[in-house]
Length: 257
Image (tube, rainbow, N blue to C red; front, side, top):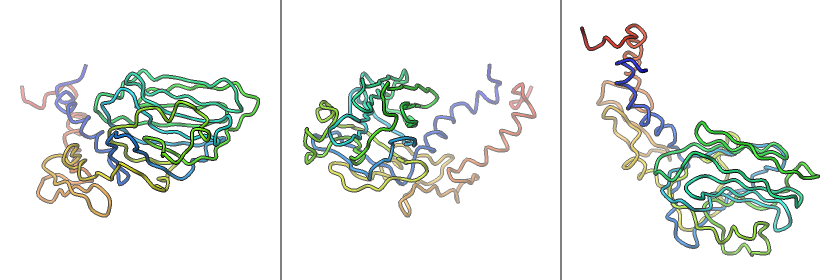
C-alpha cells in the first residue's frame, strides 16, 4: 500500500511518462486511404532493434512492414482487436505469430520495442514481453524492401509484397514518435498523408509540468521553466525535495499530526 506521500505523487507518473515519449520524430497519421511513410531499410536479417512510441484509438491498422520483395520472408506489425499483433516468416516456413495482451487502442502513449534475433523476434509493449520463433532451415531473414510505416505506397505492386494481405490492412491513425533503429532514427525517404505534429503534442499532450511553457525549437519539444519554481527538461526537478521527504517520513506524515 502506498504511503500518504507517495499517494499524493502517484497521479503525476502518467504525465512524467508521457513526456518521455515526445521527440523530434513525432508524426501524425490521419488514417486516410493512400497514407504511408517510407523509411530506409531496417537491416533486420539477423539481429537488431527497432523502437517507437504510439498513441491511437483504432482497433485495426497496419503499423509497420518489411519483406524480401515478394518471395518468402516478411515481418508485419498490426493492430488487431486493439492489440499489437506480430507475424513474420523466414525461408518460406510457416509464419510465426503472437498477440500482446496490452491494449493499445486506448488513446494513451505506449512504448514498443521489436528485437530481431535470427529465428526469434521479441515484441515488448510497455512492460509486457513475448517472443515468437519460426521453424525454418535458414536462420537469417532476407530483407530487401524499405521500412513501411502506417501504410503501403501505391507504387509497390502486390507481386512485390510477400504478405498478400498487408496492402489491404487499414492505414494507421494516431501518433508515432521516437522511431529508432538501434539508437538512431531511420531516414524518412518520403511519405504521403502524414505530417510532423510537435505543435499538436504541445497542445494536446503537454509534457511541461508545474506551469512550464511548451514550445517547439529546433525540431524538439522544449519546456520553458523560467517563470516557475521548477527546472529540468520538463520543469519537474523541484519534486526532488518532496521525494526526499518521502524517504524521511515513510509513513506519510507530511500533512502534520
